[in-house]
Every structure is written in structure tokens, then in C-alpha cells.
Image 1: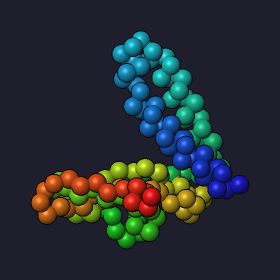
Image 2: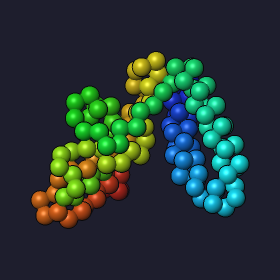
Image 3: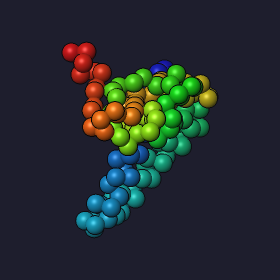
Length: 129
């Protein structure tokens, strides 16, 4: 049961992103009230999950080291000159916690320095096929 609710928390994380990204386009299309209704439903879901002990963490932009490296699965690497050290370049799935303990690790793309300054993206899931 905990895993099922934790997966629901991941889905609410993606809903939160989608609602945030849709705000301006909906407002510009005269559909600001639709955005407001979606945001309210998302906030209610998030509130109920939190009341049940479920929270999540988006590690994007954080240094990829120590405890964080243990709480995520690396889904790929992005090498570019813009990265001075290893950092989480993209969060594909959040770290889900139940009463403060990790129940689902996050899935991330790690950004790292590149010798030549060229950007290379390697997705581990694609390499497994």
C-alpha cells in the first residue's frame, strides 16, 4: 500500500509541474479559471498526501554527492561546459518520502563537466536495450 501511494505522490509531482507550466498559456488563452481549478485540485491532493505522511523532494540543481547520490537512480548523464561539477541537471522522478524515510528513490540526469565543452547526453535506459 505504501508503494502505491508513493507512486501516486510521484504522479502529483508531475501534475504540479504541468499545472505550473500551463499557467501562462491558459491565462493568455482566457482560461485562467481552468488553471485555478487545476491548481486547487493539485493542492488538495498534495495536502492529503502530506497529511498521510508522504512528501517528495526535487533534487534538480543540487550537488550530486553524499546522501543525495544514495537517494536517486541515475537515468543518464549530460556532459557540458556549463557544469563545473556533478549536479542534478534534471529530475525525472522525485524522491518520495514516507514519514521522512525514502520509499521511492528519485530518477535523475546528472550534469558533469565535459573536456571539450560539447554536450553529450547518455540515457542509461536507452543503452540497456
